Image (cartoon, rainbow, N blue to C red; front, side, top):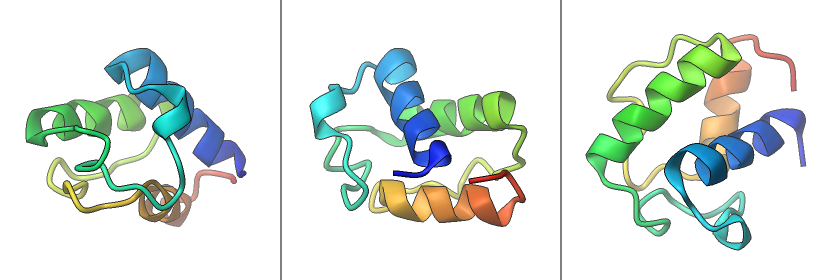
Length: 79
């Protein structure tokens, strides 16, 4: 598990109340029970905590944790 995946898992658990045992690389935000408002909140948290510039509409319900890690790494955040 990369450092970004660990940070993202921590944010999902501590900021959005997702059970830690449910956060897996291939799971989608929809399967985690996150709606569009929660995804906007998550995007803002990621941008603040990791110094990224992800757009508000970049994360969608079908987006997986692994895809988000790739998006963050593409922003130049070290893995």
